[in-house]
Amino acid sequence: MGGSTILTIDGVSKSYKNRCVLHPVYLYIARGECVVLCGANGAGKSTLIKLITGIEQPTAGTISFSTEKKKRFAYMPDHMNFPKELTPLEITSYYGKFLNTSMVTIEATLKKVGLWEERHQKVGSFSKGMSQRLNLAQCLLSDVDLYIFDEPTNGLDPYWVIQFKQLIRELRNNGKTILLSSHIMRDVVEIADRVAIMFQGEVKAYGTLPDIYRTYRCRTLEDVFLSLHVNPKNEPFVTHV
Ligand SMILES: Nc1ncnc2c1ncn2[C@@H]1O[C@H](COP(=O)(O)OP(=O)(O)OP(=O)(O)O)[C@@H](O)[C@H]1O
View 1 (tube, rainbow, N blue to C red):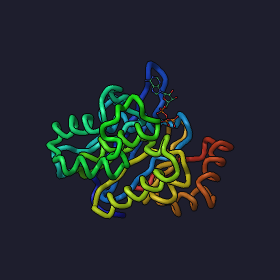
View 2 (cartoon, rainbow, N blue to C red):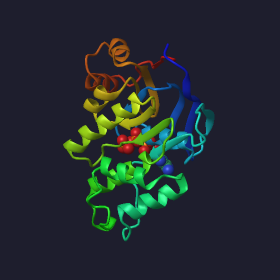
View 3 (tube, rainbow, N blue to C red):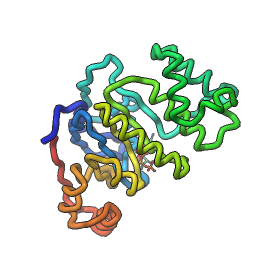
C-alpha cells in the first residue's frame, strides 16, 4: 500500500508517573501524504506529536525518520508564547537566521499568513488568531520534507481555516508530507489522505476514511466517535502503508 515510509512509529507508548496516557502506537506515515491524528480532548494527540518531535521521550518504542533533508521536520506547536515586545518581522528574521532563510522567503511567508502589513506591530497586541498565524509562519519558514502541526486551526477564523487547508494542499502538491492533529471533523474529511482515530490514549484505527467508515460501519467521523463512546472496547485495527 502507498509509497515509501517517511516516519515510522514503532510501539511507542508514554506514561506519566504510573499513568499510561498513550498505549503502544504503530504508525507508518507514507511520503507525500497528509495524515491526521483525529481524536477527542485528552485522546493523546499532543502527547504523540511531542514524542515524534522529541520534546518528550517515549516510555517504550522507537520513532524513526527517513527524510532526505538534514532538518527532518518543521513543527507548529499548539501555541507559542512569542516575546511580546517583538514584531513578526523580528521573530521570523530571528528564526530565519538559524534556518538560513532569505529575506524574500520571510516576506513571502509573512504574506502567506496575512501578517506582512502587521510586520512592525508588537506581538503583545496580537489577537489569538494572529499569534497562531505567526506560529504557522515560523513553521513554514523551513523547507523540509515533513511538516507537523498540532491543532493548527485553533483560534483561526473561518477565512484562515480555509487558507490553512489550501496551504496544506499546496504543500502536498509539492510532495511534502504532513502530519497534523485535529478534532474538527470537517477539516479532517477535507484534507486527510489517511486518518488515525485516537481515543483514550489508543490509536483505534488507521487508514483512509472509507477504510475507517467500513470498519466502524459508520458514514461520518462523528458517528465513529459516538460509537467509540458507546463501546470504547471497539477492537483497534491498524493498516500499514
Ligand atoms: N506532562 C503531563 N503530565 C501528566 N499527564 C499528562 C501530561 N501531558 C499530557 N498528559 C495527559 O495525557 C493525556 C493526553 O493528553 P494530550 O494533551 O496528549 O491530549 P490531546 O489529544 O492532545 O487533547 P486536546 O485535544 O485536549 O489537546 C491527558 O489525560 C493529559 O492529562
